[in-house]
Image (cartoon, rainbow, N blue to C red; front, side):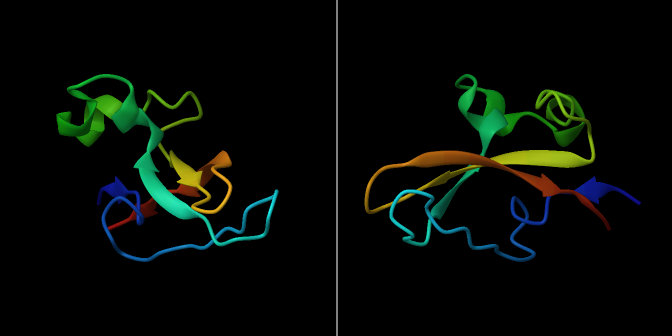
Length: 80
């Protein structure tokens, strides 16, 4: 079995409200995808340990469409 991020793979969605204005935030994807031009194209086996937490978590960036507030949220990977 392989552990995958359920958000990256479209298995489910989560909703966080903005800490500043309480507007629902939008998922901007995994933080690792923003490190350089090639990051979104790398295999999971390479990028899993980049987040600094461990391979069982994936850090996602969420952005408020109303006020522009940005926050990182840790998403637990699931076995599939």
